[in-house]
Length: 264
Image 1 (cartoon, rainbow, N blue to C red):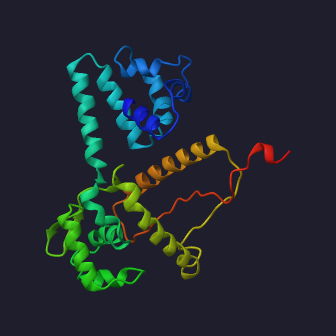
Image 2: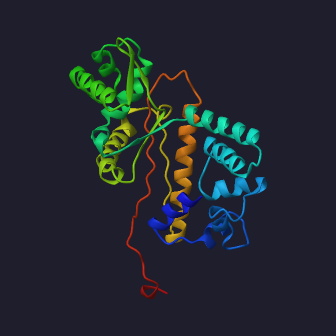
Image 3: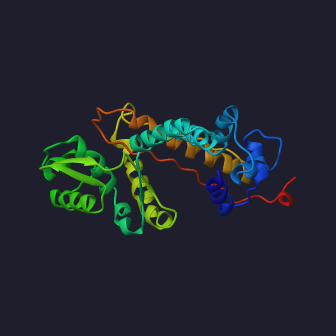
């Protein structure tokens, strides 16, 4: 909770009062006291706090056991909670891309081939290249596979048989802003081509145009972030993967901000 508060505070105006209000507490400093170790979080309040932090699925489950571990007075209960936390962490491993793996975001080829190679055991680079919707040469696939192994995104279990070291990949706060910008442009262009390239039953596009203010915008962004986590969790539930998709979430301004004194 302290990490969440510190992160939100760095990104803009945020207070313990707002955090507590979002979690359904009347006391403006209760969660601060919990973080300071001067109070504890009850079981009935775990879910509202998790929701206020944007946790979903296994993240909420992990947070629940984390609170149980922190509140436990018996070693047996602490041990049980810790084992469950370790199990969840092992099942839902996430790779954070740091600056040394900046290359991962240079092209769509890296994340796509990272997903594609494990579901094509024994495939030659040219076979993988032929299954990609966008053009990539066999030589490029070979180079991408070498990088993914070297950087730790894939591990080689046998000749031409790969598995992922982690289920998900996210960017670190330091490397993410610069590295991901080119990827967004590239994936955006691919999305434009997909409108005419694929039939409606192969792709899904939707959108809405609406008026907002700063508070509404932040709430919408938080909701999309939560949705994105849930989508990744759903995908991770399935083992019989047979195709690679990319999902874009985009929110952008269509007008300038209108000052109140410019209109009645």
